[in-house]
Image 1 (cartoon, rainbow, N blue to C red):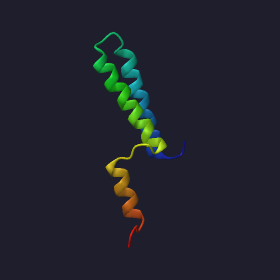
Image 2: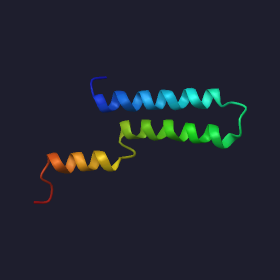
Image 3: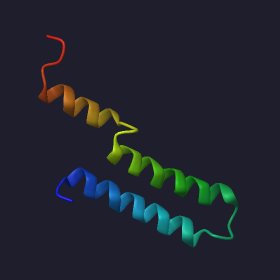
Image 4: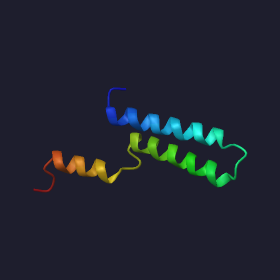
Length: 66
């Protein structure tokens, strides 16, 4: 991977998966929250989910609708 944002998102997903693994045996809400965080990070990489920061970056760099 060469995209710094993608690397950070993969690291975030990996950390969330480690937390979910470590929370095994805890109430399922804790595990599910970590799994949802990992999924969200991976969806940002694939484009299924976007963040406000990413949208602001895109609109700042490209003249859309002018």
